[in-house]
Amino acid sequence: MAKKQKQLEVAFLGGVGEIGKNMTAICYGGDILIVDCGSTFPSVDDTPGIDLIIPDFAFIKDNIEKVKGILITHGHEDHIGGLPYLLSECGNIPIYGSALTIALIKHKLTEKKIQMPKMHAVKGGDVKSIGAFSIEFVSVTHSILGAFALSISYGGGVVFHTGDYKIDYTPVDGESIDLARIADIGNRGVTLMLGESTNVEKKGTTISEKEVGVTLEKIIETHTDKRIIIATFASNVNRVQQIVKICERVGRRVAFDGRSMVKISEIAKRLNMLDYEDNTVVDIEDIKGIQPEKLCIISTGSQGEPMSALTRMANGEDREVVIGDNDVVVISSQPIPGNEKAVYTLINNLYRRGAKVLYGSLEQLHVSGHACQDELKLMLSLVKPKFFIPVHGEFRHLKKHEELALNLGLKKENIKIADIGDRIAVDKKSMRFIDGVEAGEVYVDGDTNVDSLVIRDRKQLSTDGVVILLLNINVENRQLTSVDILSRGIVFEEEFLEQIKILVEDTFAASSYKNESDRGGLKNGVRRKVARVILNKLKQRPMILPLLMEQVKQDLTEEDDL
Image 1: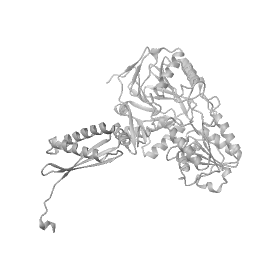
Image 2: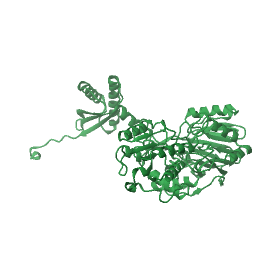
Image 3: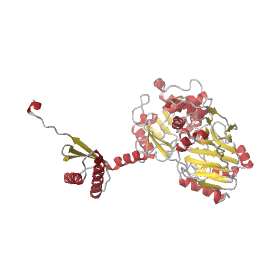
Image 4: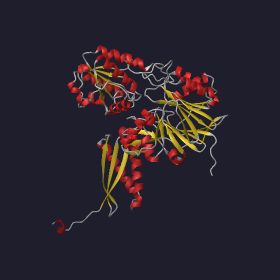
């Protein structure tokens, strides 16, 4: 029988050195817990044509018999978006999360036609024994309901994972972060804390979600003669709740637009997390019978997503909503880094259609769901960990969080900055890096996973174009009869084209091309030489594709001709 592991090991599969695709494996006593399994959205520049980026699951697949469960801190895509892909590869792994989180995961798995694993809906304060671990789910406030920190007890101590959080003393739903329980856990002793770092560069504290409600109420009450369209994150149920309640007070009907907005509002209503009168909400297909000034549309698209409801409206492509000068459009979010161009293009297009547009830089229309410096300090002070690893941030965020912890008295040797693929061992006396694990990014394109070589080729095509060299060869006498050159995304002068043809002919003449085994060497030789001459002449690196067009010449007789 294999000896059971007696030290705690933490393997980072995502969510460190980056914001997105959060995934951590916690290993002890021969058992593994997975914390979150998220995705991230690609950028057009860095990952052209890619739909989604998820973690590499190689470590999990290699140790699947040890995996006892998946703990989900909350239902945002960067924490649940990779689950359909993990479960399709690894089968039935039990999942633990809040009621809203579980409902969102079930919807996602149904859409992807993935077999449902065992799912356990938990509440704040619940304790679950899973393998070698005992996990307490601790309620925290975030920009989505049902968010947890995790207190994970094992034979040698306690790991406290903060999840994503902010300290909101006046939450919309009245469910505050459980600071008293966090302090109690800290007083009992925490071996290792994993703490989110997203807003570590921002001083002070995060503004309460209720402040957004005040701004939205002012906008709705002062535009009594206009139709109002508010775009926000569908998962921010508290914000949607505030909008709905304001509309009920002023006598406006509400319509949800956008697939995720409709679905999440349905789920939240079913779970009693979204409250409104029966006649408040109308289907988007039925809005034509409502006076515009008596209607508020709550839609997706605050990030300028190409297929979202608000983008369709701005482009004049929405079947139900035609934007005009009788509309006030409110974008209740801030652009996620990388989305700025899409968001401002959206705003410009809305203006072109005559709408009045209100957005973050003009009004207090969005607050973060992540803790700022003073809140991060409070969390560290309450938890009082012996060892600390900052997570959920780019490298600069992790370093800033380390500095903050050092200022609070933690020892330098008791803090580690991890990268994807790192594995850290923790015992009562020390924390150290050990052999890493296979980890990285997997690119999802439609229903297919593609590797980095495909991304490299796409980037090369987008920047430098492609050159196709057709070598027409008579296979009977092994002679090159002609060279045809096709190019896309790069322009050649006729004189330079002739130089390339002569170069190809000379390369062919110098090759040992005789049979099938020589084809690869000929193509590689042509590719290298043509690439070099193009680089020297034009300073460009197009993709070079030599194609051997082998032909058999037939001598036609007079009879054949007839």
